[in-house]
Image (tube, rainbow, N blue to C red; front, side):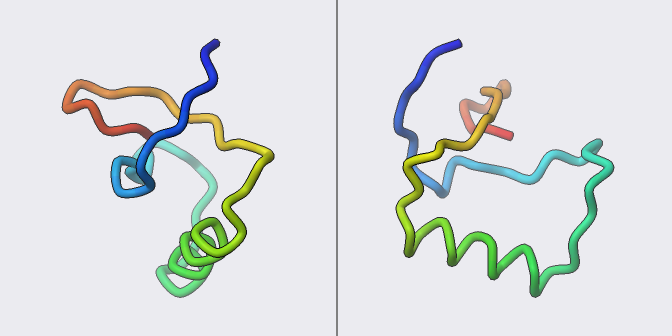
Length: 53
């Protein structure tokens, strides 16, 4: 596992993730991450187009 900073616009929803949220909650989560600049980290995986899920 590597720790790195990536631009938030490279993070994409994971289509097979069973945790569903409506668009309003998802947008609130994105806004919260942008405002808080979380130091806890978010676990992602790099996909073929160099974005992350």
